[in-house]
Amino acid sequence: MDYQENTKNVKTELQSSTFRQHARLWLFDHPTLNPYKFSFNSAYRLLTNKFRMLPSFIIIGSTKSAGFSLMEWLRQHPCIQIQHNVHFFEYTYSNRLEWYRSHFPSSFYKSYLRIFNKNDLISGEMTSTYIFNPYVPERIRKTIPNVKLIVNLRNPVDRAYSAYNTLIRAGYETGRTFEDAINSELRRIELIKENNKLGIKNPDFANWVQFSYLRHGNYAEKLRTWMKLFPSEQFFIFSTDELAENPSKILKQLFKYLGTSNFEINVQKRHNVGKYKKMKESTRQFLVDYYKPYNKNLYKLIGKNFTWDK
Picture 1: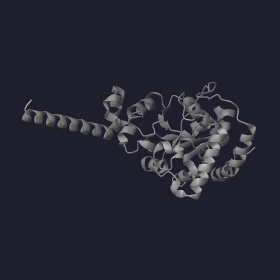
Picture 2: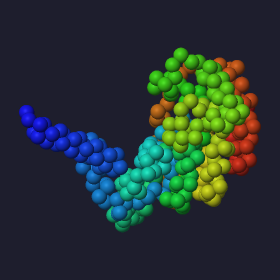
Picture 3: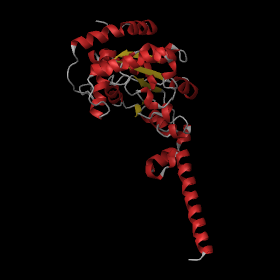
Picture 4: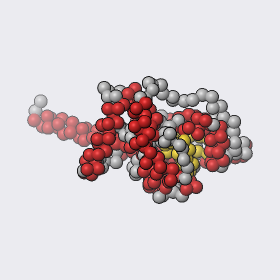
């Protein structure tokens, strides 16, 4: 092979490599068009996004708080549709709003229900980690300022233990007892108090959900950010204890809050229920005492007492 032919081949190879690099970067900038995630349904939804609704309600959390059961029960209502774990306002907010719209029903379908079923379609989403990320409230306010916010809160002691056991099953927690995990987190909390520079400033989604068993139970701290941006009438806040004791009552209140007709829901089946060993009584008492001041702040903030301090 002579020099000119070799040079020509090298240039061709470099051009091909450059093209592939540009194509890869373009796909990163246009994730909805990634051919590896292509489907006719998603393509159709994206093409018709202008005719689609934004959600009228969002279940913002908290995690490990019977949210999955709540979502499945609400889905039984013929006029309610819910998308699960869209995560748009966390780590896909830089994507176009068209991508977000593509997840929800069209206005044509809403008109069809109104004409033939005499009912309005209500669309929503549930991303239970929204409540933890401090960047999410402002993003939602800018995009859907009148959205209704549903907040399901679990006793923070039980929520922490459930979250720990979830990470055990997922393989993220290995070799540490629950007591080791919370003691480690307590040390991290103290270190950050002593030196704020040690706190993670990266707004990446995972930083708000991993190994924050105790911090995610400080609901007042999380909700205070939301309540500075949204009026109180846009919130529907309840505890999982209330939901467990009388699910039909909570659902009836929710239907009224969402502005739809009451509907008989089959609440016999509970969804996504974890099974694990009972927490040590000494650990439970420690956490009950730990959360007392945080719970007090929550009750004052929302004007409601969940009696978690017993």
